[in-house]
Length: 142
Image (spheres, one colour):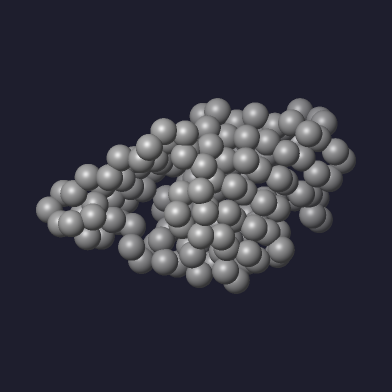
């Protein structure tokens, strides 16, 4: 794998975090292949298969989350082919919902990437908790 590919995959992960945090649904969904799978069952948030389902999930997040911050400093790319790669990411996610619940998740992403039309995309992302989440009420019941 070329250094340029590793940088592109790091940028893909950074865009994932920034777009969902800023509620940029169209841009976030475009980071996934048409047949992508976003599997958050290990966190209790279900599995979302294909861009239509991923979009619906992103719209629900944008409607219910007031503030979010995905910090993704630990990106490891491995299992590299010419148009496919695998990787893992450790992340810290903090969010405040519109009903004032504050949440903190320490998670890992297990990723499969695919290059389509010269652009790296997520083919599959499995999200797992690395430590139990913290959920605190800031004036309502969470």
